[in-house]
Image (cartoon, rainbow, N blue to C red; front, side, top):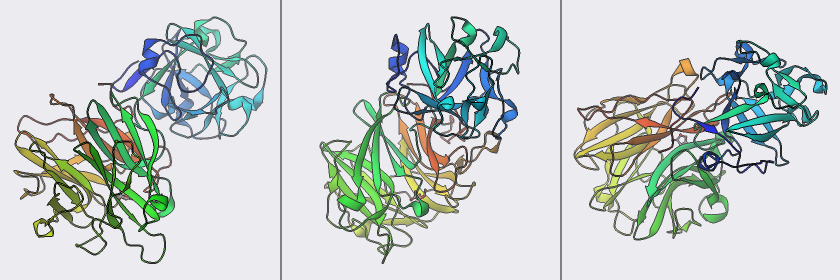
Amino acid sequence: MRTAGRTALTGILGLGLALTTVSPAAAAHHLTDGTSVELIARHSGKCADVVSASTADGAEVGQYTCNDGLNQLWRIRDLGNGYVQLAARHSGKCLDVSGASAADNAAVIQWSCSSRTNQQWKIENTGAGHTRLMARHSGKCLEVPGASTANGTRLRQQTCGTGTNQQWELNTVSNPAIPGLFADPNIVRFGDTYYLYATTDGFAGWSGTQFRAFSSKDLVNWTDHGVILDVDSDIAWADNSAWAPGIAEKNGKYYFYFSAGRASGDTRKHLGVAVADSPTGPFRDALGKPLVPAGSYAGQMIDPAVFTDADGRSYLYWGQGSSHQVPLNSDMVSFNSSQVRTYRPANYNEGSFVARRGNTYYFMWSENDTRSEDYRVAYATGSSPTGPWSNRVGTILQKDLSQGIKATGHHSVVQVPGTDQWYIAYHRFAIPNGDGTHRETMIDRLYFNADGSIRPVVPTIDGVDPI
Ligand code: FUB
């Protein structure tokens, strides 16, 4: 089965695994730590499936018609020793040979992930787009017994052979776009490359200090360029709360706007700007002080975003509680405070972002609290980068509980140049067990209606196809 955002993988790169061949398809779809895959049995075309989507230790794993369920998606964890763990996305539990048995026909189940070798699998390329999965403790292979094609047949380990019932296609999905916990994504295109910048998540009170950069040519395969700014070590006036970056390029320099503050004392957030000669840094503080100090305007000085218009003029947007909007001076690190316009659309919370299509400017924002499953994105329109803006037109993006997708917000939008193809990057609660400080970054398609209104985005588990 192949649905949008799912890409067959015929070899493995980046995991240091023993492979006999690497096909062009593999080169196009790197499988890296954190990638999620379907495991599709070659003889039957069916998916490895945690029976009844159970989250219990010991739940059996069978084959079942592929159905896009999270209990058929397995997140790869590269152990760095030639082996991987495969964790079911609905439960977070690992593919495991029951009782660490070394016998033929031992049952394959899910179990809480541990360091035991009966949860470690070697991925061997058998050619023609397929792999064998060999358990480390036994050297035996994952198989569908009797080459059955029936739904529900339980998986076993068996002495490795050449049967197609021991051969698996690894079908990658592209969401989350970047593996790990990241929120508030800012997606941009510089030259022929897309970049993602985000809040590094997973810290109580959003107390992370580092920003990373990721790049991609196709919106599916992302390269991690590592830490580009650490507010604790690189910014004199902050040591905490590295949140919600936005970036823009001018005359070959890259300006990186971010919110940050201190962990103790006056913990209010300020808006800073750092500069670099490359989109992947290293960035240094451009001013040695905040661009917009706490208290300058109503609400919190957080969530910067930049829009650059067709005439090359860039505009800065920020604010929680109110959206402040101003043209940047040509130095990109100052603005005329008399030009700041402040808006507070109905339900506005944070995450201002502006895009232009034709002569219409779209002002978008996030509503509700990022810890609420109702965190969502709405928009208004206008005829200039700073409004005046219409009343709230509608909701662009919201939870989809039928897929277990909650708290979709703090987004950004990018257009493929010369086309009417648009993509939205946003975060949602991690699956499974996410919350307001454990969020993942998604990319999905965004479409406009003929009248210029934005069609509600369908948030997907799979993500997008490579462009
Ligand atoms: O990630 C920290 C904060 O959470 C951001 O600044 C807000 O937009 C919310 O997503």
